[in-house]
Image (cartoon, rainbow, N blue to C red; front, side):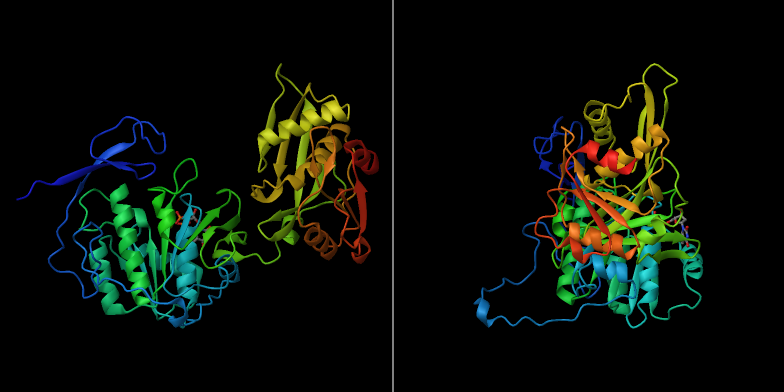
Length: 463
Ligand code: TYD
Ligand code: MG
């Protein structure tokens, strides 16, 4: 028997080396090289659709010929429109035939639920849901929770070996394949354990080839690591057509499906769901829900008009400012960057003359959302001042502007969308930057627009 060939792979970026290295020269991470065995033989019996080995020399594919672009006829295969409007939106208008989509997210966020729900809702298509994580009975129980009526064209396969999966695909001939998850899959062409760099890469290549050659879309579920990036090699993200990220606070009910990469559409799209006892429900008008718990005139609350992806959202910013009990005052922030909060507090202290040095400041974005739009700055400042002075802000006023280091109010992107959303939700007044009004017909909107240029102007106007 030939000696097994081994290669060392960086588990962080997928770089390879013939010998062990302490520090990866590509990504700079320490102690990430692991030895993995690579076997080069083709398996004895595979299904009739056989993925060729990716290793050089083992390939059996025909050489392609170049053609003039003019001679190529683009057959416009229609996209598969799911009943899930939020998913269609993030994919740029439905699932593209032959595309490979990677859905990443933390454990327990609802990736399996979302995929099963989509599989069950595609009644006109045959779907093969491959799970390497749950048993058939567990999937059945989940499906029963999700829908009352079962879908006759949804096939479940609990298998982790790709060659066996392709054999089943041959039999079932599905229109869509879901793989839960890519880290549990293993191919017999590579000998290292499931979840290792070479396995993840090999399995993805096999599914990619299958998708392109048969025009069957494949939806892959991927795990993410502690620091939020997709587990496995970075090359995984380059290999697939679309990368979606499913995120949200596990203890809150809202979930956001975000497009990170899309070869067939925009990357600034966003889908919003609510996790309920019966699965994920699409939220088509998020602002109404985020603001629904608003009671009249409480101090420490301000409404910010933010933009998540392409969608305008009105969110409630809550602040609590109390005298500090310990020597060092605490600053804590949920859903908003804490460094940015500290900067805004320093600006308030220096430019608006507020004494915040002896106070604890707690900030929260209601609804469990994590936002990083600088247009929330003014709402954050307003909420902090409102809580400090115990003066409520009228409930029909909202704010959208960035606050600069010298206390100047800066313009934000796409104010027209924010204004239109605020108007739709019945707001009476919106504070915006003085620089934003130019080129915009402010009289067109049914709400009063207050242009401001300095932080103290905002505070004088509000309180
Ligand atoms: P799951 O899809 O298993 O997460 P992932 O595949 O991303 O690890 O989601 C599991 C969570 O969702 C679990 O905490 C229970 C919750 N859940 C509901 O609240 N309602 C439901 O109808 C279902 C199916 C799950
Ligand atoms: Mg799962």
